[in-house]
Image 1 (cartoon, rainbow, N blue to C red):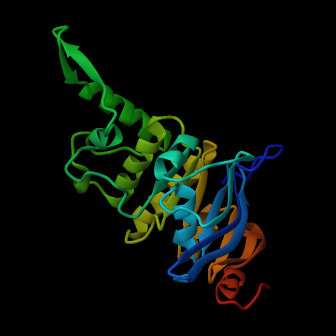
Image 2: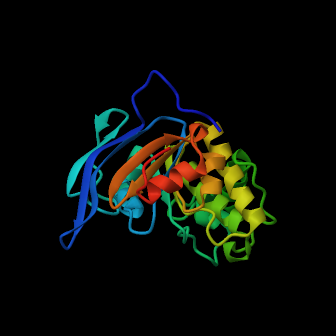
Length: 256
């Protein structure tokens, strides 16, 4: 795990975020910073506001009030394309993969390369797609059994690596938000995903993880942001606290 870099502005800072739904405050006065190159978890009970905060950062929700700063400058994030242009990518639990396409087809979806057949007809350059996809997966030390196998036949960890490779293709990804990345996976597949997070931070890609699994949170993160009832209950350095400290904050019992 890499720690945050120093001597530079935060990669991401949110100040006093508010979001209401039908008069109910889902998020109220939420502020925190994420430094370049660190892994941060957002934890909290159901309804704590975790997903709402992430969706405002990723552009899926428009904030009612508050500011988002990217590398120290105000950022207008009104939709997911705005977030992607900055380098913010979000991996939801469904991964947004096309099950019947192979890994290269998913990685290059919407930006497929073409070559000229006989110098005239444009045809899909599948060889270039497979080569580049293999290179991207090698960056995170994941090997697929076949580049031609539909992703529905891949393991959970392999599908997540394919989704990550799609983010890495543009070489713009600076912050990857992962929503419950180890949910519904077996023990071996969970370990592969945790290793994947370690490898991404080793390459100075910042990670924000939403998770209910504190064991995994303590394995991969530098800091933990605890939300409760839509507010920040605490920001903790992972190495300086225990799981019981975090649970106590989640339950509203204060910190040790």
